[in-house]
Image 1 (tube, rainbow, N blue to C red):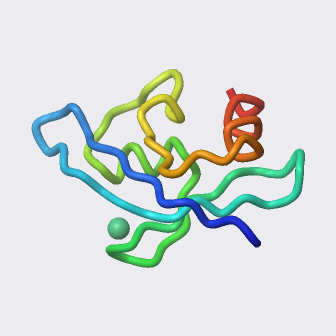
Image 2 (image 1 turned 45 degrees about the horizontal axis):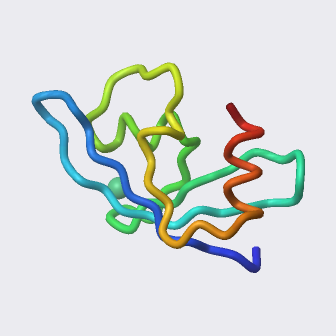
Image 3 (image 1 turned 30 degrees about the vertical axis):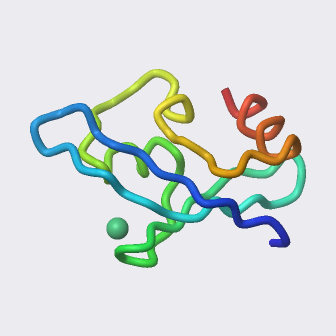
Length: 81
Ligand SMILES: [Zn+2]
């Protein structure tokens, strides 16, 4: 739990809103989890997109902006795809 980059997403739907959170990167090969700043809840990337008002999306991580994006984080997120 060394790296906690900020992430944000914004739903496209009528209830879409911008949600910010932190990306929790576990060890290689483990799931990525995102904790939202508004509730402190843990979400999978797909759930985080829905939390922002988005619907079911095929590639949820593409709807999530990571800032900054260290190479290791990007590699994990691409692996998740
Ligand atoms: Zn929240």
